[in-house]
Image 1 (cartoon, one colour):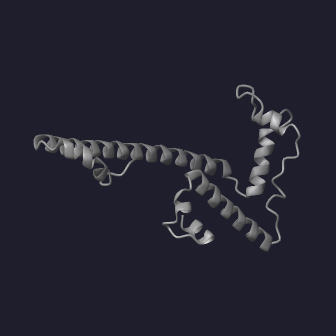
Image 2: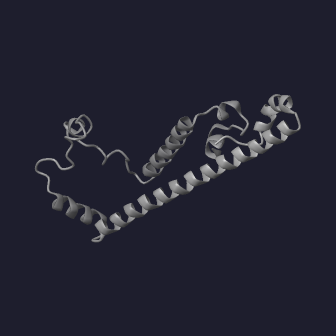
Image 3: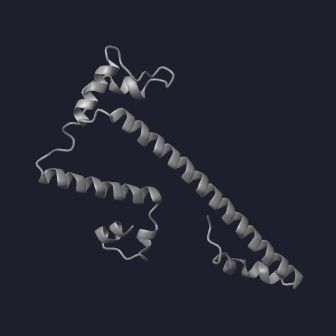
Length: 163
């Protein structure tokens, strides 16, 4: 968010800045990152897009337009061992496959653990908020202050942030 504020010369309380959706913020940040990468590549005399083109005209048909049950990772005439040798040659790392397997497994495990922890945290927060609101409602009901509770509900919402 700070990068967007600096880039567009906006204060944190600017209504236009606060009205941005998550997707709009992500798009702006990714665009700024891409601009930075392009400037760095230009300074080195490189072109970011020069090596990323797939010149195969059937690529979209083979990958994107086929139903998932018909999609094949290897095309006819491709050799998995030869592709692996090319990857090893390009990376200069004979243990590339094992290193990638470990990295993928670690990322998958960490992601699952993080999701479980986040889910548990959200469930705890919901439970705590429910207990707090129940206590407030019971106290107000016992004191006969239900009308005030309805009138002041808007004020009390500020105490408990939405999830």
